[in-house]
Structures are given as structure tokens and as C-alpha cells.
Amino acid sequence: MTSARTVLDESGLEGEVIVVDNGSTDGSGDLARAGGALVIEEQRRGYGSAYLAGLAVAQGDYIVMVDADLTYDFREIPRFVQALDDGAQLVVGNRMSSIAPDAMPLLSRLGNPLLSGFLNVVHRTNVHDAHCGMRALRRDVLPVLNLRTVGMEFASEMVIRATRERLEVSEVPIKLHPRIGDSKLSPFRDGWRHLRVILVYNPTFLFILPGAVMFLAGSLITLLVFVHVPVFGRNLYVHSLIFGCLLILLGAQAIGLGLSARAFGVYFISEQDQLFQKLRARLRLEHGLLLAFAVAAGGFALIGIVLGRWAAHGFGSLQEERLAILAATVIAVGAQIFFTSFLLSIIGLRRRRDEP
Picture 1 (cartoon, rainbow, N blue to C red):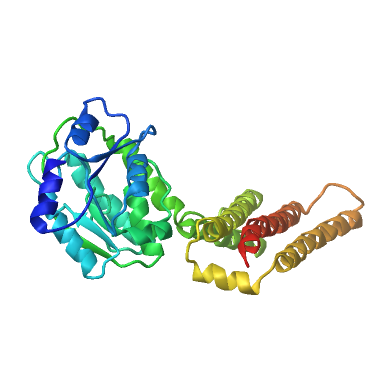
Picture 2: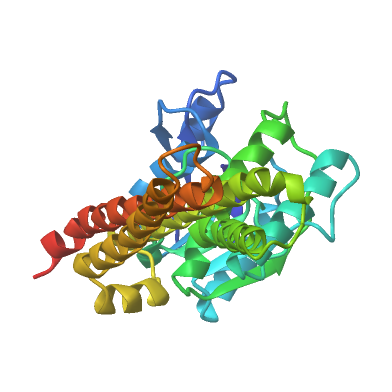
């Protein structure tokens, strides 16, 4: 508290110091209150919960976020403010090139660059230390960010949301110092939470791309079976077909889930998704239903062929196992398209309700 106030006074910056106490047992909240800080009591535990509580009451045009364990130098605050003055809407510190001895465990030194790199690939960002706890933002971008997570993944979510909303993001190199007190971080648990939010914020990467790969691979295997290419040996045609059809079904399911997730992001989280918006403008529920009926009709036509050939052989033993398996698969894909179309329409009710 004292360090923050001293930096503000020496830099000629007007501001308030807000401390969020969400269940500390070391009396730090009382010390901050005695030092003149506005202390917010937040009963919900979690890194994100604490910051959400503090952001909700902040009054300044600029907000600088700093962990209270003294790992960050409060004298860096004017540099973050200057970056906002220069046009940035979110400023993130970068600790990775200046880490004091014993300031960061080896596992975190290895894991942070990997997670930040994966975030950059999946979300096409360019932030080298996406989990740095010292950052600044303009208060007027908070409604745009619409932050929701309550744990350590809050740091990743902020970068992801800022990138998806095309905010101006910049970095400030800073030094990381050894912390005061015991760390509550759990590398594996918190790392998983970061990885989880990176994935769920990109349904294309999580659902649609794997679904498309499975669907195409299954279709190729199925085609090779029917043109009698002995990919897995002639005696394994049926088994190969079952595997191919399984991939087709899993792929269609994953693609449907991905489209639904993207619709949820547009309608409920107000995400910018130009491709989905274009598809929404051109396609309606009826288009999906027509496609579903066409695909299902193809499957029933194949069943008709199977029954016709079976009848031609006097209803003896069925010799068209492969065609029957393919027919069932095609009908199942048609059913998935049918139900996914209705699900997308249900999610879209949010848009129509909110439209003027």
C-alpha cells in the first residue's frame, strides 16, 4: 500500500489504491486498510475472483493490476500508464527476460513460455508472457472484455478476449523479484486451467478442425473399402469400414459441437466472429433441415438397395453387410445435421430476442 501510494505521488499520478482480500489469514487486509487503501472483501476464493471484485469498484480511467506479494516493482507503474497514454488498451508485463534468482520455479520457467506460445498459435496473439500478474488496461474496455473466469486462467482469458475483440495490446519488459510469503500456485492444476481456457475459447481448434480431419479420414477409408483397395487386407474390409464409419460419425459430431460453440460465443459472449456472421446471414434453419433430409434420404436409398438385393437372393443370408453399414452411417449423419440445425436455431433465439 505504502509503496503504491509513494509511486503515485512521486509520479504526479492521481489514483486510488484498491486491495482485494478474498480470505487471507495473515492480516494483510487490515494492514492495507490501515495504510489508507480501499479494501474489498471478496468471499469467493480464486485469483480471478479477486480481480473481478477489484475491477468492479475501480473508478479511474486507467487500471493497473499488481500482485501484492512484491514480485513486481511498483515503480514500474508509470511505464504502464505511459503505454496506455500512447494508445494501448491493454498492457501486459513481460518477465521472461529478467527473472531474479529464486523468483520463479524451474517448472514455471519452462511451462510459461510453452503455454504462452500455445496461446499465441491458437488465438493468433503475440504476447510473450500471457500469465504475467502485472498489467494495465483502460476501464472502458472492461464491458468489451466481459471477463468470467475465477482462477489463475483469468490472465489467459484477458489476453484472449482482448485479441478476439481486436483491442490494442502492448507489452512492457519488467523484472520479476522473489515473492514475500508462501506461494499458493499449483503448477499442474493452474497450468491445466490455463490450457483449458485456451482451448474452450477456440472451438474451431478444439472441435471443428479435429472433426474435419476425422470426417475426411473416415470418408477416405470408406471409399477405399468400396473400390476394393486392400488397405487393411481383403479379409478385413468390414472391420476397416466400421472404423471408417466411426470416424465419420465422430467427425460429424465434433463439427456440430464446434458450430454450436461458435454460435454460443457470438450470441451469449458477444464475440466477434465474421465468418460465423456471414454464414448466419446466408443460412437458416430450413437450409440445415433440407441438407439433413437429403443426407438421410441417401441413407434410406442405400437401405432400399440392400433390401432389394436381399429379396433377389430369396431373403437368405445377407451379403450386403458393407452397404448396410454405410447406409446406417449416412442416416446417422443426417440425424446429426438435423438436430444440430435445431440447436443452432435455439441458440440464435438470443440474437432475435435482443434485436431492436
